[in-house]
Amino acid sequence: MANKNYDLLVVGAGIVGLAHAYEAQKRGLSVAIVEQNTRCTGASIRNFGFITVSGQGAQDTWRRAVYSAQVWRELASLAEIKILHEGTWILCERPEAVEVAKAFLQSPMGTDCKYYPRASYLELEALGFKNIHNLNLKNSLGLLYSPHEFRVESREAIPQLANYLQNTIGVDFYWETEVLSIDGSSVHTSNNRLDTQRIVVCPGAELSGIAKPYIEKYDLKLCTLQMLRIKVQDGFILPGSVMTDNSLARYLGWSELPEAKALKERIAIEMPEYVENGIHLIVVQSADGSLVVGDSHHYGSSENVFASDKIEQLIIELMYRVLSITEHTVIERWTGVYPSSSTYDALIEKVSPELRVAIVSSGTGASTAFGLAKDNFDEWLG
Image 1 (spheres, one colour):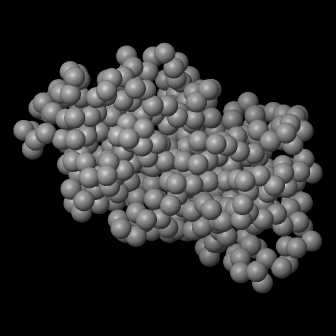
Image 2 (cartoon, one colour):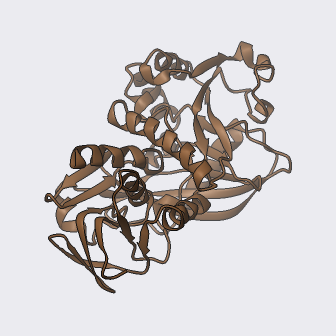
Image 3 (cartoon, rainbow, N blue to C red):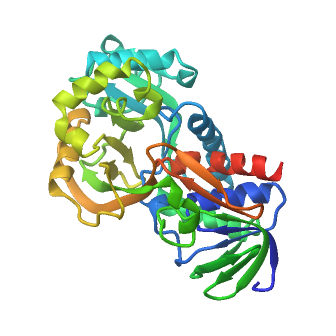
């Protein structure tokens, strides 16, 4: 394998790298992936596995999310990746949130989404929505529902995707191989030299490695988030992914609507600790019934490796506010980390005719990576 010449060499086996490999292989290119670890260990497996469309930033990010969701569904069948649940429920507790939800429905991004006022809650089961009773609706004025989202188990789905690329469609993987330097179309690694026509570096949160000279000008930060896996009472089943109305004040597809201004102002007054720590609630469910719950957002030049009990308690308090749970036990804790830009949701740095760097810089990698790869190749390959 060390003597092979490839059409494309991908550096990094996170979701952005895997997406580029899949998109390139579909276009008939021979592809290899070089990864310094024995498996993916970064943001791609530390997230919710929540493939989101609604709430993504307008224009490119939303468009990429729509495409990526289609590809994920395609790959779920091909790579035997299980879709655990579908749809998103956002509990609107404030009148200002209701206004944001209704405004969103009038936008192109709100297509096929619905708003259900409190008076219609008893009709939801009859409409085919199961397990609505597991939402704590006593504080809500209405529910914003999106059918576009679904959930996979990232720690399983990413290895399954890599296995499919390697064993079914012929992508070569060089695990435990660090890229030391790039010289034109040659890549010098800790194990060998690889020759290729094109190189795309997908560093994820490894901002100080081989990609550093090419991306320093973007002044990227690292965002650290706290995540939990929680066991609740037996038989508890979510109706889908669950979010709260402070998410409407955070995600750009909602927060950039003019109607969101009043909601953001009210949340800043009522939830100052949540705003300070970048906390908004997402809850999804795993096949074993446990819930993956998060998250918070802190930005800096390096990952914050120490988790805060106070932040954990704030997240759990918000979870009890919107779910009909009677007990919980935290069975796992971890931190996620991803590159973040205050300007770009993603970037493609065109270093040379042979070399590019691709980064999702907004925490939307699972949801947009395939769309980013498509955009990259549409422009690069013509």
